Length: 490
Ligand SMILES: Cc1cc2nc3c(=O)[nH]c(=O)nc-3n(C[C@H](O)[C@H](O)[C@H](O)COP(=O)(O)OP(=O)(O)OC[C@H]3O[C@@H](n4cnc5c(N)ncnc54)[C@H](O)[C@@H]3O)c2cc1C
Image 1 (cartoon, rainbow, N blue to C red):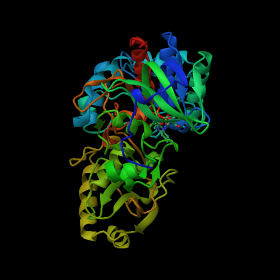
Image 2 (image 1 turned 180 degrees about the vertical axis):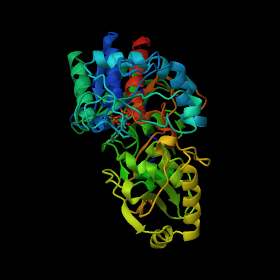
Image 3 (image 1 turned 30 degrees about the horizontal axis):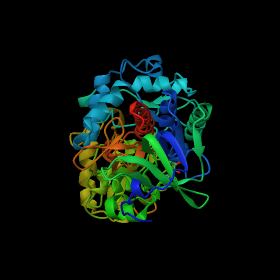
């Protein structure tokens, strides 16, 4: 697999068309499906090219948790007693994405989020009007609403009124992804969108002025030219399965050990867009996590580095914790707990690094300087007893002194602990999906959405579960609409 931009085929070299359509879409995952539905509803002829033999992509592998809210709340938020405001959602996402935030995308996403919820419901998605109150990554019950980011933790709780915005479909277990993609696939089929499976998009077809007119697809071992009168959408996912691209752009993510995605996450869409002159954005960024909850009781513990120092409020989202863990000096990240608070973490696979009746005994076993850990625990415990955390402002609900007997879990990346990751960098696009050059000029005829583009979620320390499927489905729709508005070329 290469990290080289894919050179487009020149329009002047094309001697015939295998197929002509208004809108050509590369990839039948969440972004591609939603774009196809919108473009077809606007009256366009749409063709999807999918390298696999079925729809789905990473969206079907996911929990299909979707981050939605604002405008007074979705029907579920309101039923659960939350009156979410667009400004609070906007302020939260802007703060969470920090200096990488795309204000225009975040603004549109927040303003139209309740509309997106209603659109998903109109596609057949069912959301139960119930809240999953326990601290969790996703609801394994059929409950819908839960906190999936850093809304309740410092400093974000002081920036925007916290509100739960993670929406899970009404389905038992971690089965949202196949359900959502099943529904979207049915909607695509209902619209008589042409779908070519086992069809690998190879490159774009571009004229000498830079306008994109179609793409080259390999079907039955033959290269075929496809003409797209209104535009080509690259919705081919991210690059977590492309070793060369990871090494070149996002080596830090390789500190994780479980690339999460489908085999098609090879960056093909990004490289095709780049070859046609598209600019890349935030390619080093990704989601990377240490999934230490559930169970919630582990949040009563503290994370320390190899020097025995705390480095974050432990009530944060698991990817924010991992992001800060990766910035620590020295080799070693440990979760220190009262033995009584230990319960088996199902997604973590951390080994016990040490136990002890005294802090010193445990520290010796772990290999942390005992006097440092003693100092950290004395300071933490004295304040926790008063419901305070002057260093990192962990919420009082998670503060209580850590008492003997002690246990330390080894959460050091590389120790065998589970550290899943996927990429968030991609093509620079407008909220409409138009792909931009380095000069931020749209490339006529070229669009991107989902993980092929750099969307709303841009960093692990500001990530919230639901932002990626939310971004892919929402901005897929925006691109589908925009392509339908583009004039058809003769
Ligand atoms: C296990 C897991 C759980 C997750 N849970 C969540 C969650 O609950 N909420 C959330 O927000 N995010 C979650 N994510 C992340 C999220 O699923 C993805 O980031 C998102 O679904 C990507 O959508 P997409 O449309 O961009 O890509 P995809 O859904 O991956 O679709 C891309 C499609 O393009 C096809 N393709 C690739 N190259 C070519 C080519 N050259 N020619 C033709 N077709 C091609 C692929 O086969 C694929 O079908 C999870 C991810 C995983 C793996």
